Length: 119
Image (cartoon, rainbow, N blue to C red; front, side, top):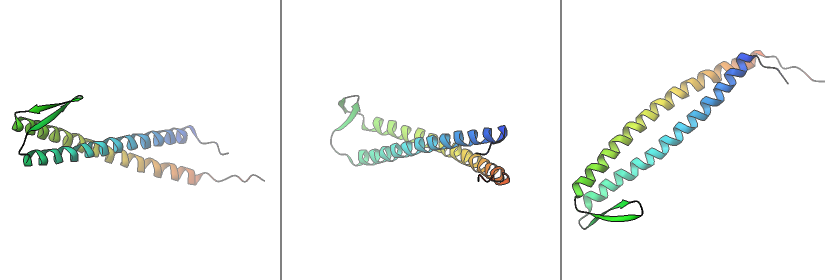
């Protein structure tokens, strides 16, 4: 087995860490995008609702008298999630750039290591 230089070992470790961070960020982003779609759908349904409206509070459903207040809360939550999704998107792009740069550096370093034949 080839011995890698300490610098290359460090780059490989960084590469693996960035890969894990990128997966985590993308998972968080996907979850928030799902929440965002649900909130938007909820606001749409709330706009169509003509009867009583109930709000989930823990394990309880509580009747809401202020439909516009609930709609405002939901729209504020949507706005907050959009900001967070955009932040995660920027973070993912930055990590992706680092990931690709390190991948190229590692591949170049590995390409310079000549394979030793074991006969």
